[in-house]
Image (cartoon, rainbow, N blue to C red; front, top):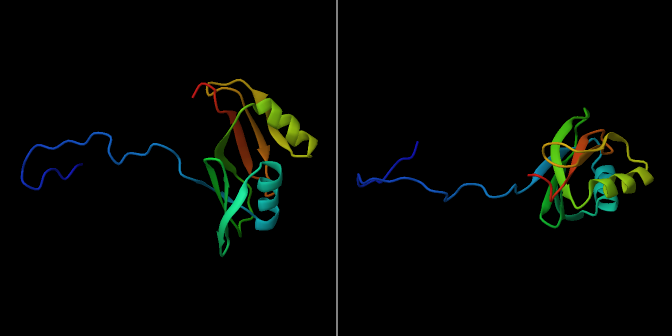
Length: 131
């Protein structure tokens, strides 16, 4: 509910202040070092900062915040945008990465799903897909 004009005039919001992009996504990890190695060496991210129990990784506009101390794997709900999910699938298969979903066509376009070193599920979707 907008507060309105403090002088009593008519006021309505337009698009100012509304989100335009996803700034970052957080991934809970068992082992920060192993997770950082995975995301950096296999997916091309770079460490751009860290603090106690946290690493900030970036590749282009994609920012992941790895947080440590977690033991249970989960579905991150993160869909990384890639040029071709089939190429990523082939590349990561060659590296021994476990896939939970081979590339398939869906309402969001072609996507695939794989596990990181903590057992978390991460998705990769065609960034030029139907979204």
